[in-house]
Image (cartoon, rainbow, N blue to C red; front, side, top):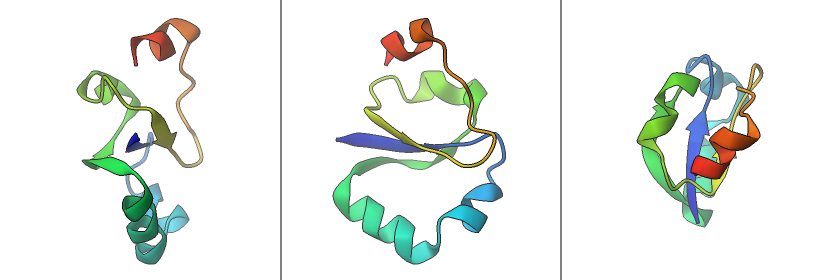
Length: 67
């Protein structure tokens, strides 16, 4: 299953997901490299699972259908 880290503050990923947790998740999912903010969603068109932090972007139903 393809997954991505999406957040409006990339620095928050380190505060929410420890390195160990991210490594475990990467063993369970096929992650896109790096992380993305809301404005970069077009770079992950076939993502199936999004992991986020505080301030998670609120996707509309139309945006979700694009994935």
